[in-house]
Length: 81
Image (cartoon, rainbow, N blue to C red):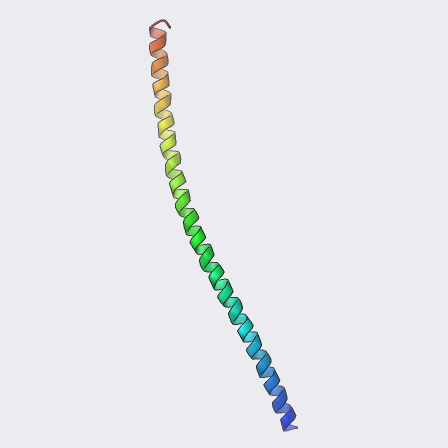
């Protein structure tokens, strides 16, 4: 009976080792995925900051150009054209 119990215990231990190994592999895979996602989020954040700066510059340029158009339009009107 002891041999049967020992054999059963050994099978359970082997099954647990397999489960632990599978879980460790899953943890490793998820850790790598997390690191990749963090990297991609940092990349996206940097791109967003650059785009926000570009939008700010374009708005400024648009304002300046609008003012130039208004000035030129007024000058043309004053010149009778």
